[in-house]
Length: 273
Image (cartoon, rainbow, N blue to C red; front, top):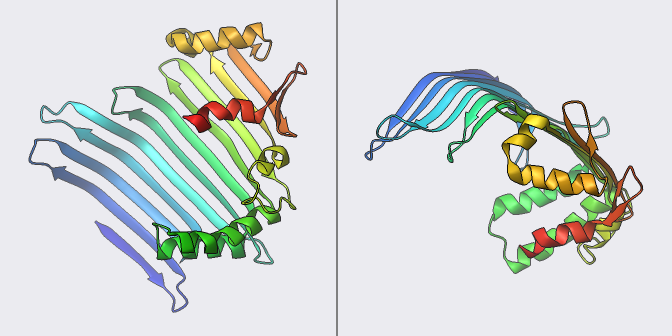
């Protein structure tokens, strides 16, 4: 393995790392194999997060049992991240991209062409730094530390920010899935810790989800859900699949046909669970 780079007295760092291979053998016969991990970065360690650029590539990581049968696999994967401040230094923006050509999950499911492109923007840097500083000093927060945290959370939401999944896509054989969503918490969303439900009505955004015909045919439970949505006219049939589009505003999920559903009614089952 090789690591090289340089660091300044102010903590600015650039580095390159290369690990040709690693093998770990366990007493029960299981093994972990890592092949061709390469990475580089430029920036500095801020209050619990990396401020700057980083990228990594991995040819293969797999876990096998005592009979060398694959238990978990990631192949031809990469990661890139970029976190930066705006010109005035009061807003933080970050984008993370993960992708993998092939994965085998622990339940034996094979996933191809996985990609996650996630971004968060216009975060108030001062309150975010305070939140990270408190959490870094004590990951298991007690009541006193929680009380210190709440004003900074209020400030974070009051200043507004944006969240987005620019792309979440994957394939199961010929079946393809793609999801995109954007959420925006507007400036002036005050005292959120005192009234969390305010977030429901304040948040604005959009949602776009696609299922290919092959994916629907592969999983009966997806077929059932698509059939119900087709009856309700909430999902549209495309040439090679199905597409669902909706807008988020006023505490409601609003579909193109004019139908509206309260967000709390859709989230309540998950909250109860």
